[in-house]
Length: 286
Image 1 (tube, rainbow, N blue to C red):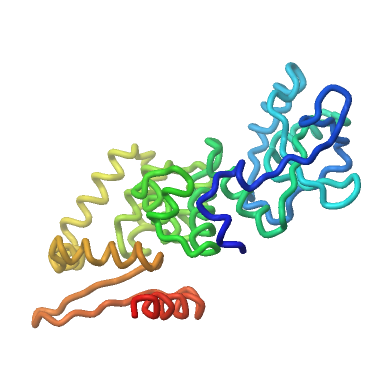
Image 2: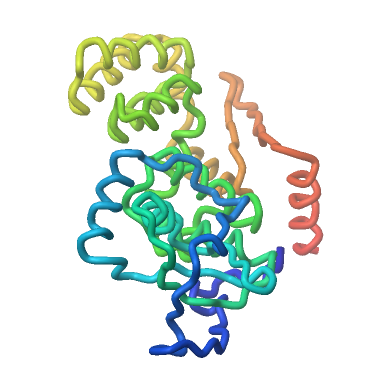
């Protein structure tokens, strides 16, 4: 990936191709059969009912906002943004679809697709969390830098990333809309996956509201000796230091102190590349 692309808006990564058509030099009518989905599309789920609604809208009033494509070879195009509109158009048998034709290098297409997806409001929470995580991993971004990159508050990004630490069963439940983001955030406050799943099943069975879920989690944490010890173990300044280290490294960090005052800082590496990146950070401080 070209790191110099970071920090620039989506429009800055795209260059209009001069394509002359009857009616416009920037919006083109492209044959559906010549358009192909991006194989690296970060979005993995397209809600069937929502697609039906979009298809109905397109049938009645047409496509208001053109999709964005790049030409991969003569008369063959790959989607950069707008796969839902493309799929809906195919559903109702459209032969052509309005599109902007852009020029983009291979190493920029994924970033553009990721950022375009983040700006949408119809993604589920897990898709958003995975997108944030991929941007941080691929571009070696801290939460602070990512917040500037996508125009979201750092706390918002942190809340989404915490969802990826939940057991797979709960993540699937969130994707399938069995629970909401608020339920998942409450469950993410627990450290024990077994307890998380137990309370998740309780939430589903009892049809708990977000408030009821938060109260249930809070009650469990109050009566749990383990959680009491963990909660009182770190001082405010120590918790702040742990959070800052985690943000700077863009990795999960654990900090624990014994009664004697000695402590242990644990950095969770996802790969050897993370270790080399940390070593490089120290080298720059010399």
